[in-house]
Image (cartoon, rainbow, N blue to C red; front, top):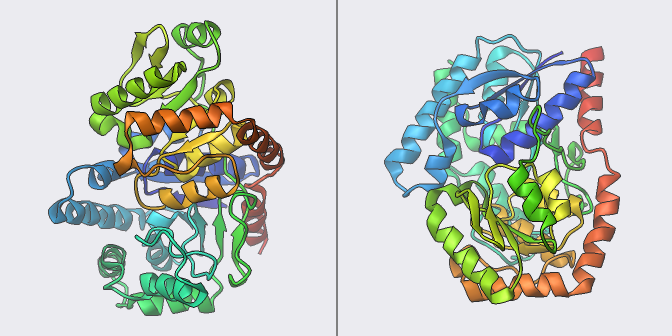
Length: 401
């Protein structure tokens, strides 16, 4: 089949879709990923077809918030999706941020499936993962809050607005968010979640068609090799800790680097920082650029990170303790899962992060043997999973019809 993956999002979104795309290509399908231009090489290095989407979601997410910036990004996304209607495809796979692609599939006359990195469908097990609620509201209220996020324009104005404008741009008849949600439910629209069921057990109250498959591991960049400075640093002393804040780090690189260095001085630990700067900051601290997490994380003593879904999975796979520093959106949810699994001490919300708090958490994670033992046991089970297989099987079945 000609499979088009709508990879709206940042690096942490596009990487897993590239990994999933590789598996689909190996199964004989022709795979193209539509993604924003800063992430072109993530797709092309994996040997997959690439289509550009205009705009940069990182600027809209992490820059100084303004209604005009969000509106501009939304308009760019609608135009980008509309241009994809002229592409040849037999199936669309849609990430959560790319759900307006549901309407694109309708306009193209092809089926679609969800490939989500976050669990957003209603459940009583937890409140909506992208909501401000951090504690359970009770089973009924958890489900109700999630339903409202799907059905009500007031609850989700950005997504609802994108949906409305996309349908209009594609020449489709209007549909309210409630009607779209109910159509998806009545059709049992399939959604695969690229997360380990050991990290996110499938809610028992989910309808058929919502599956938790296991992680989709990003492929390494073609021809990548660790540079000599990094290899020498790792070999020059005890295993360092890793500190990184994902795509957010590049926005205020010096500030985040200074905070991390001060925390490391308090602990006496060595550190590898992914905070937007590069170079040897001292004999004990090295700042790096993009380094594949599947290579680096098994070589460190602990991983302090922002708890994006992809980074959370990479840390779990490596079998090392975590220090959870969630920033926004679904990140507090993944932080809570790491703590509940016993592989991380209490999470530190990013807005409350200080050198002293980060130092204390790193020390606890590194010196508490229980964290490492649980992390290693979890990693062994997660590494045995094949998260891409259920998606490949579903696409194969569809191609055989």
